[in-house]
Every structure is written in structure tokens, then in C-alpha cells.
Amino acid sequence: MSRPGPVTVPETFSSTNLERSPIAPAWLVMTMVVLSCQLLILTGCAGTQRSSSSVVVKRTQMQMGTLVTITSVAPDRQMAQAAASAGFQEIHRLEKLLSTWIEDSELSRVNAAAGAEAVMVSPETMQVLKDSEKIARLTDGGFNILVGPAVDAWSVLDRQEVPSGAQLAGLRPLTDRRGLSLDEERGAVKLAKAGMRVDVGGIGKGFAADMAVAAMQKAGATAGVAALSGDIRTFGRLPDGMKFPFGIRHPRHEEAVLAFIDLQDEAISTAGDYERYFERDGVRYHHILDPITLQPARDCQSVTVVARDGMTADGLDTGIFVMGRERGLELVERLPGVGAVIVDRDGKVWVSSYLKGRVRMNDGIE
Ligand code: ADP
Ligand code: MG
Image (cartoon, rainbow, N blue to C red):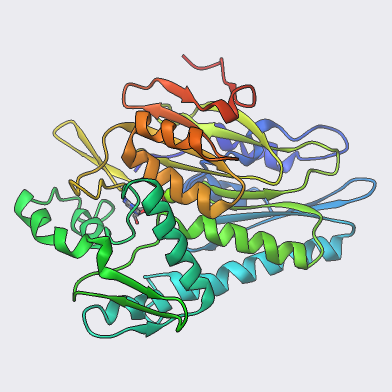
């Protein structure tokens, strides 16, 4: 597994004095992974900044198997803290519905009942499943929440075995999206065959970021960020009028930021082949699978998507990663309010027209 470098510079976190210096672009590097976030916790990234009219609170917690950083801007400290807490609580609530690591979560119950019976789910779970299907259709099946059995067979973080062609062929019928039935009226979900399972790992964090932001707004925050590792949703602006600045990590230089972008009322999400992978005989095997071959998708090194909401950004980054650069960019150009930065398999960077002029390449890297 790749490790993060100084792009997450802890000092920038501890020096986010809004009155004296604008927040450095790297302070919210969206590709933060676990180690860097641990550093941030150790260096006290939970803190409060005050400007003349607003207070900024920033807190980090481990949720949904990743580090979640919430930045909350509000007229006073108490409200900013309450809004941050509301964001964390909302993510916790959703984790209990959606996590397949939690045995009695709604999705675990759907998976356990595969091939047997329909399971009643909450409107939130239904919405994630419905929107997953929408992204699946948009990406011509590149995004497929039924790839779970194949994700398990690869077990990129544990066993790190390359499954045989026969093993993958045997799993293919279990990954057929037609096996998922959603009865919205009744709120019931059914998987057709035993062994099928839903895995919302490619979209759930973006959804949680959206819901956390809604909870923060309800609690009085005027601006903020919910960042679940690289799946991030923003609203409003910083008290000094600046948009929220992010760095997109370079997929092959752990310590480098590829490009910078500022966001307001938008989401950003990155899928990359560098966060969870292993190498065997010089070949990189990572965690995003092409649902047709059930092999790791090969056309991109990273796909960053900007969209109006987190669920769209998160679902599309995974789906476009599978579609590849050419078809992926074609899709993005057709979607209003959606942009992408794609690093293709050769390391060439492609920026869609929606983001041209907004993305600043980091000239400091070779
Ligand atoms: P992360 O931000 O956790 O890296 P991504 O958005 O990159 O997540 O999605 C990767 C996760 O999505 C995988 O770990 C797996 O659970 C799931 N996944 C893998 N391939 C696909 C696919 N083709 N469609 C939908 N989900 C996928
Ligand atoms: Mg995704």
C-alpha cells in the first residue's frame, strides 16, 4: 500500500491562522490517506480558528474505515462545534446502515439474504442503491456495486493472491447487476442468487459526505467541508472569502501534488490505483475492478471528478476509472456541472473542459 508524503504537511494544519495567513493549498490535500491523517491527529488538527465574523473548527475522527475530517464555519464557536458533531453523527448513522463490515447493517442483511428473501431497508440505503444503478447506467456498467465477490477474491489488502481465470469465471454470474432488485415503494431489496453481494465502497463515502454536509447546515454551519479521505464535499466559503483549496495527489509521486483546485458548493473525489494495491512479477494489482474481466482496470492511474454532489463525484470516479480515459472524458463532457482530471496509463494528464482554467498544474514536479 502506498504511503502519503509531505503533501499533507502537518504544519500547514497547525498554522491555519485565518487572520495572518491564507490557508496553504496543501492543507486539505484530498488524497490524504491513513498515515498522514494520523500525523494530523498527533499534531492537533482538531482546532479552532477565529476571524472577525466567523469561527472555523476542524476535527478528525476515524469513521467508515477511514479518516474523516470535518471543517465547520459558523458565527460562533459553539455553533461551529455543534455542526461538526452533527456531521460526525450523521456519518456514524450511515455507517451502521451501509457498512458491510458491520454484521447487522442493512446491507449486510441484504447480502446475508441473497438468493432467499427481500430485506426492508431505510430510504437512505435505498437512495444509495438507486443512485448506484444510475451511475452504473451512465458508465455503461463500469460502475457495478455487485463486484463484491470478485473484490473479495482479489483481497488486495489481505491475501494478495491473483485469482485464476477459472475462479473469476465462476464468480461472474454473481456480479450480474440484473440480480439486484429494488422495490422502492415497499423499501425492499433483493439479491437473486446466494453468494451475490452489494458493495458500496465505490460510492458510499461520497454519499456520507453529502449527508454530513446537510446535517452541518441544519445545525447552523454557514460553510464547511466533509472529507472522508479522498471523497470530499464542500459548501460555502472560508471566512476570508476564499474558496476551499485542495490538492490532487500525483498518482506516481507519493510526495507530490499534481494539481490544485479551489471549490465552493461542490464535491471532489479521486479513484486511484495507488492507494490499495500489491505488486506481483512487476504487475500492479489494485482494488478497482473492471466488471467485464473482473481484473483491475488498466486504462488509468487516477481519475478525479468534480461534481455538485459527493455521491455523483465518488460513483463517477470509480466508473470512469473503469471506462478509461477516452470514453470517460466523452461522458464527462455530456454531464452538466461535472468535470474530471484523468491521469492515463502513460501518466498523461487530461483535464475536461469544465475544469480548464480552474485546475492549476503543479509545475514543481517533473
Ligand atoms: P476509495 O475512495 O475507497 O479508494 P473508490 O471510489 O476508489 O474508493 O472505489 C473503490 C472501491 O469500490 C473498492 O474498494 C471496491 O469496494 C469497490 N469497487 C471496485 N471496483 C468497482 C466497480 N467497478 N464498481 C463499483 N465499485 C467498485
Ligand atoms: Mg468512487
